[in-house]
Image 1: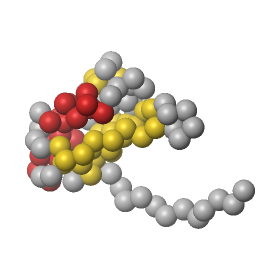
Image 2: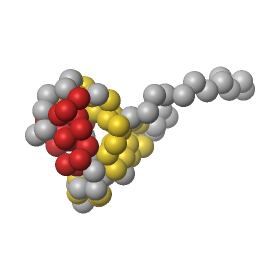
Image 3: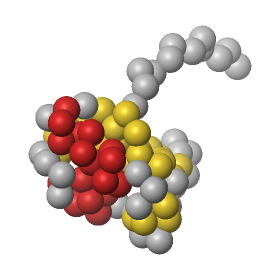
Length: 88
């Protein structure tokens, strides 16, 4: 199950985020999205969990909870929309 996590502290590491979710089950991947040019966190990321029931428990348990003093937005990730390429 792919989970979207928003409203993250810009200083939060992927390891710290993974620790929050691992309390609910096995985390297969964890990625915080960063700006290509600056490398700074964009304040959101994605966590992949192997078991759907564990993923749903993590969503229910962590949505609205405080992660590094910010109330996290946690829900099931939607499929990525294809966008047309920009021409410069």
